[in-house]
Image 1 (cartoon, rainbow, N blue to C red):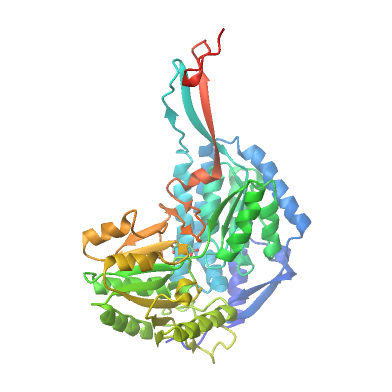
Image 2: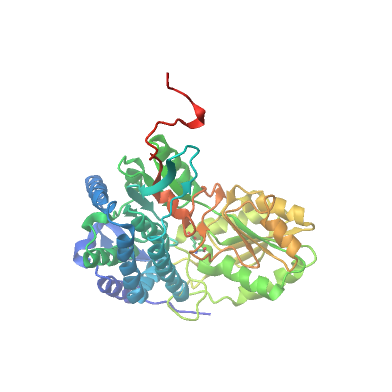
Length: 511
Ligand code: UN1
């Protein structure tokens, strides 16, 4: 157990140093409109300026003007910018990770992992810059060629959340930039410093590679700043990560002006534990997926649906692991669970636990506040393990905190029914040694999520696949595979080299 936490003064010095190393001019960004804060102590670090509505308009216009230039830069040349960004992120990995820990409270290895995820997507995007393939289809007319070309789309507005303060921007920005788009980023109000650091590194890469100066814009502010991007006709694509409530506002507003969205909203991720599962592996994977990042990933494991034959053993082993989890200062190497982002998050966790008990559940372990003496203003908590008699109302909601509900099943159809009977559809898994069961879970009538795993927890996806989910998760896909297509516009081209007019579908218009 970690009993002391870093002082706010130490954290402030660390943050200022990291910002300076990444090339942020502190004097230019300090102000009194916003507050940089750390969940590690729950205290404020310093004040920051915010962008005015007129400043946000200027940022969007500048990004649009840069786009007019960038769209005709050859894609592999655009890739060179992203390659340089990846190199700079590699060189500054420790500093960016420091800021992730300062602002999001992630433990060291997860903060470094998040920066690694940025480096990985840069690598992916550099390769992609030579693979923005369009198809050629056989034309039904002689002497004609039918094909498609993918063109840059425009300014991409990125609205990101506190819990992945930098990786989610990188998934969008690295791909958007090689696709010929420019980016205006509105980070979470809780994580402005990580955004300033990444933006300074991208600005440096832009200057070094001679790319248009204004293709990268960061706007700092509250929800109204995001709304301005959502409503701007100069922003053809809004990629927004956050709650389902936020997505319900953003989606229709962008659709009303026929803009596009990539929505990454709430998850309520579950894993099924079959009787044949390797229980060592299962418990290990479940503890990371449920308690890692203090339960604050959209992919966090929130429901474990366990076969009746093994449920007692699984609960017992999970409870033992939960009791041992080192909760504390995320800067200390021994810590595995850092703080919740703020007091409100802890209050919502407590409220969910109370409701779970009212709905017949039993809190087996956790839910109790930690480090109250060392850090009275921070929100440290022991992750909670709760057994439930049924999938009641509270279980069907996403509580953005480390609460794992355990449900029991007897046959796989019932498990799949329970699994799918929630409004969200992001990530899922099955732990089993039975290939038939695994295939059933992966099949069309199996798990209904965007991510479906076998013998792996729900969190920690690699960037190579498309990331996103169904139902109230919003349907968007980011990151790898062919997610890039959302960032481009497709033109279908028919070229007639026959010297005659030949109409499709056999239409004859000659008299
Ligand atoms: C998120 O929680 O917002 O799969 C993104 C994962 C990470 C990304 C999570 N690669 O957990």
